[in-house]
Amino acid sequence: MVRNKPSGDAFGSNRRSPTMIRRRRDEMNAAKDAAANQTADDTSPSRLSSSPRSTSPTARVMDKGTTGPAEVSVEKKNGFFEIKGNMSVAADPDVTYGILTDYEKNPDIFKTVSKVEVEHNDKGKFVTQHAHWNLLFWSGTFDMKMKVEEDPSRKAVSYKLNEPGFLKMFNGYWDVEPRMVNGKPMGCNVVVTQEVLPSMLPPGPLASYVSRILGNQVKAVLQDLSVEAERVQQSRHIPAK
Image (cartoon, rainbow, N blue to C red):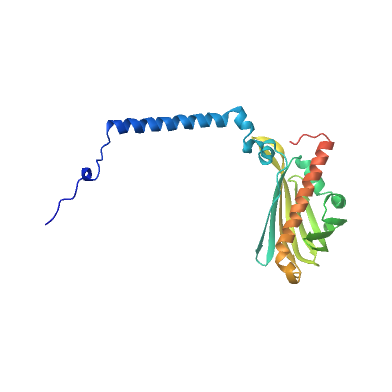
């Protein structure tokens, strides 16, 4: 015998009573009122003053156009290491670019540079940098002679390794770009890209730390550059425009 399929009312009616409808409507209205009150509390002056977002250093940095953290990435591809870094600096692009290209003063500014020699000849400008690195308990030194080309109009510097030594490849460029905040110039962005290949990988445990060493070098240079640029900016009373 085939039984008829029970209707919905056999297990509970699909229709709601007027009492249940009113109760549900009252609950929904109460929830809306609570949400509206919460929104008002969140946007009140006292609430905003204690908000983590409004009081965080990062939020203030971005709003005022001051110096932000250095961001650096390292990727190994095509047999060499590609390092990319960028940082917002609370200083005029001209000030920042001037510090970057004042090679003779580099040792006074950058902790990783101990000595610099600049040579001009009919083939262009050559900069020899004597640098050092540190990572945990290890450290080392290396020299590199680069052919440097400057473009003041774009506030850009490109360089290429002229004489292989400790490094088999060391090419890259720097760009100092005006930084815009709400449509107004506010400091600058410093962007660097490098292609690096050591002549040989360090022995032992250091071999796995090459990318960290290279990344730390670029991060240190960006941080030192920002500190000096802000110092010069303040000493000259130049607005970071």
